[in-house]
Image: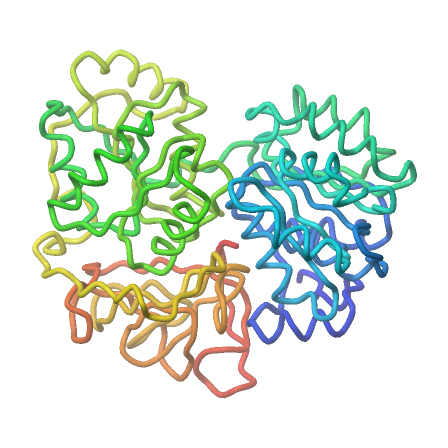
Length: 497
């Protein structure tokens, strides 16, 4: 029986805030690290993306941070990308209470960020480049920072940020606590821990690469001219989906072309402004867009739960890139589908990837019936919400209102309808992998009532339903939501955060 948050020493007010979101039991990485971090020890954690690291470092930081004076934060979280920084900040806000937090990154104006720093914030979430700019301008000082968290240190290394991370660490207190999380702990990351951590407590959870083997991998032999149509039809059958391309120009072009096939698209790459990137990610996470078309660099650090399909539109650079791309749909042991569109001259490179990843070698002809459930591709288009509707831009998935009843259940409990909430990004009623029963098969973050979470292609409500006939796929975390009364506790294994 895993310990509760209270047993790990988490203050009651934070426990209540988590409980309000249906988060009542910690996941493995949280159980392993929270007590050590609460005690002020340096922590070195290896855990895959989607395993709950944000709460693992965020809870101790919020619990222990001292009061801050203007321009002098007391806690610092470093993240490699703007999107990840935003998501971490929104997660902290959900339980931080009176602790003041802020986030800084490039691509937007200095004004609002500087204004918040001048008022004083206890915890600052930052990307290295913008943080160094603000330090040079005199808008922030790190001399009183007592705890530094480095998230996704392996991505920091891949993106060339470690020199900046070292310069930033050198400006914090010498007796600071340093907490580091990474999907791998070798190479440059191992060197960083030796240089900047003091007798760190090391915790390693899960595999050191995403568990992509839990996904279904399909390699189609295709002509170049057929790729866009095949990708669009595949997305109609299994979404939300992420399509990976190599270039910024290619991402824009493919986004336009897929839209002509009746797919709601969002595009993200480094040449887009921060507002454009934020809008694209919000549209994808709120289900306004069925597919996110992304370059590899732009997609780093984006955490989106419950991605059904990953498409390698352009070939990955190597097997490691294939694993990281594919891991978007195989989070915390859950399955999904990975589709590679292989042109003739690329077959040799893909066979090499298959060998290194441990997948059966070979290609097949394109067969759309292998993607998702039958019939979804011909379903009528969902009405797109108006742009002037109130939307959430906080990085949490809200209701996609994919209604239906009947088909195969994907839930904690069997039965008629179902709601689906993500981890800390689950928003209102969801949270940390809870999947709560409710009514007529809506897919959302909130809900309750009796019945389990079926996710089906039949039944009323939304004209675009997701066809899943038969076969349950359960996951989640112990929650006090769902049927059986307000105090019932229902538990199912294997959910993701």
